[in-house]
Length: 283
Image (cartoon, rainbow, N blue to C red; front, side, top):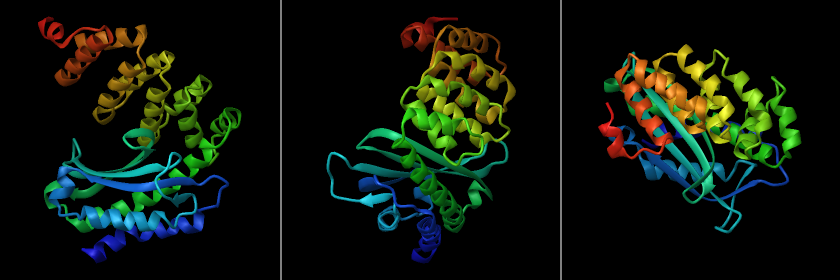
C-alpha cells in the first residue's frame, strides 16, 4: 500500500522545480482529504494519503504550512470515482478546494477517463492517474494564488491574452470578484472543442452571476453531448434572468430526455419561487 501511495505522490515533487517564491505565499494550517464510497471500497487509506499530502504541500514554495490563525486556510482534497455514462469505464475526479473551514474560496477540479471498467478497477490504476492530476492541481493552485494578489486591471489584461499562463486563473479570480468585464472572455471559452476548458468556463460563469450569459449557455446546451448538458442546465438556472426562465421552459416542455425535462421543470420552479408541493401539482 505504501509503495503504491508513494507512486501517487512522486509527481508532487515536480512542483518544487516550478515553484517561484512569492511575496505572499498561501498560508494553510490543515489538509483535509475526503474519499467517496467507491474510493473507500477500493481500500484507499485516507489517513495515509492525508499525511503524505500534508508533508508534500509543506515543501511547495507557494503553499506555506503555519499554525491556525485568521489568515490561514484549509486545503481540502477530494478523490471521487464514477462510471462513464457511455463506456462504463471509470472516471476519476480529483478536486482541490482552498477555503476557510467549510467556506469555499477557490475550487479546482481535474478529471480523467480511465481505460478500465469500474468492476475491474484496482488501487494501482487510481494511484497512477491521481498522481498526474494532483500535480496539475498544485501547479494551477500556485498560479491561482499568484493571480489572487493582482489588481482587476492586471487580471483583465491577462484574461485577454490567449497564450497567457495566467489566463484561466485570471478569469476565475475576476469571476469570484463579480467583475463582469471578464464576461466576453468566458463566453469565448464556451466555443472551445476542449471539454475541460468549457466546463471550467461554465463554472466561472456560475460564479460571476451575470444574467447576460444565459443565451450563450443555452446555445451550449443544444450543441454538446449528454455528458455536459446536465451541468449546463444547472448553470443556466444559476445565472438566472428572463432568458434563463424562457430556456428552462422550452427544455421542460420539449426535451426528449425525460430526466433533463424534469430537472428543467424543477429548476424553473425554483427560479419562479414555487414550492415543491406546487411543482408536484403542476401537469
